Length: 271
Image (cartoon, one colour):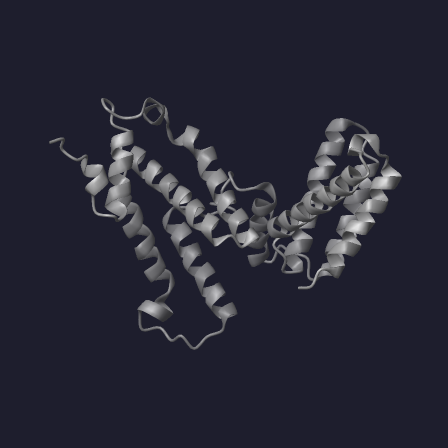
């Protein structure tokens, strides 16, 4: 009788997944591809999986969300296994670390501190706790610890939030709008490609600041607009297909009229 592989009869909990990861990385019996990977090579997959989680949420697809959360969890297990092999930390250390952090950051839930405070005050307390944590890591600069690997718009917003906490911020939205107009003019009049790229960065940075002042998440807003663009362009393609044409066989005037038709169509769809 063939002995059953313990992977298939292992308890169906986190220990099963961590054991699978350990086996994949085994130098003698594991997967050659998995063995060759390191933190740098796996990091892009981690970022991709996080975006796929967000995409499933945006589409309201709970079946897909379950699968994507599993993929993202596997990324955490992957990094922890590589760290364990190098003697840095284990997956259990990761789990206990985040558990300890959440307890420390929620004294109004897990300790004796009163829960009788607004969400705004809780946010301020959260930021104060994070600031103390950064201090223990000797991150003394206001902008220290804002990850370089964040999407550019998200990082711009976080940098601006940090600066605003120490008073480096415009007092209201009108100042941001004035700066937006100024940066747009500088972009249009930039003399060469390098200058235009620099001014475009300035303009996008101010746009992120405007979103922050309006309490809008710029990444979420842009994802929504991207989805809207895809939806409306697919409407154009479908309409042209019914006419026996492709977008390449159409012209801007016709496609622009169909774009307006797509907007009208969306307004007619009941909520």
